[in-house]
Amino acid sequence: MESRCFRGRTMCLVAAAAVTLFGGSAWAANESEIAEHLIELVKIGRGVVSEQMANINDASKADKGFTGDYMGAQVIDRFKKRTKIDLRIPNVVPQANLYLALVEAEKEVINEAQPIINKQGIAFKGFIPAVFARRTGEQFYKKSGVRMKLTGIDYRNPSNRPDDFESEVLRMFSDPRHPKGQTYVRNTMVDGRPVLRMMDPEYAGVTCLNCHGAPKGERDVSGHKKEGWKEGELAGAISVVLPLK
Ligand code: HEC
Image 1 (tube, rainbow, N blue to C red):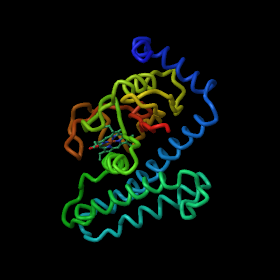
Image 2: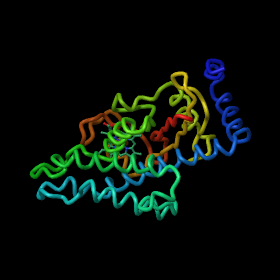
Image 3: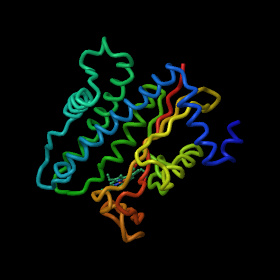
Image 4: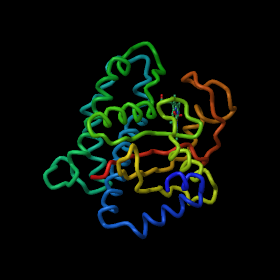
């Protein structure tokens, strides 16, 4: 079935999505809500790093005051605002342990980056939202067995390379007929185990183009070659692989 699907390409993915939407049980819906919450927690953390970029890259300052505790508090506050879920009272929150493991991973990544964040005398330090997201995904996987990553068709870091499933879905997302922002969710198998896979597309905003925009091939501030993206184009996706019980 899987191999037939991948030969069937886009149409097959569409059919599979319909199965998930209309044939799914309440249990499946719940699992996809969990995946959505995990994506939200990563996006919030990445947003906090993004807001801190000027502070992080301030060459004149040593201690930036941007600690793991600051990150943890911000993530929990903003998650509560967006979802009404208060991780400070975890007893009443189903899945709180899983969510808190992700918050913990986000804190650890910021704590481990303190030496570079607080380095005086250099401006651009390479600690950017995408790096934060990658390291968070790696830490979270060790804690939970749930895979999360930022991926893209023209990826820069080999750790972000899309697998076959992700490549298919990214291709679907980059098709102008795909409704912008619509996530893709599917129950499938990975390594012989049932999983829920979710992908949430992301698009290039103006702030991304300094590094990922035109002219294609020119080096950006991080030393990577720019991809030549235009504003609004598909940039990539957050991908989750959630093992099902
Ligand atoms: C300062 C330069 C810079 C800016 C600004 C920037 N990126 Fe990136 N981006 C990078 C680097 C460097 C990586 C590789 C990170 C890593 O090592 O995992 C990356 C990785 C990514 C990836 C993961 C796939 C890959 O290439 O490995 C996506 C998706 C992505 N960026 C999207 C965006 C979006 C969307 C924005 C704007 C909101 C943005 N980037 C802004 C430099 C940048």
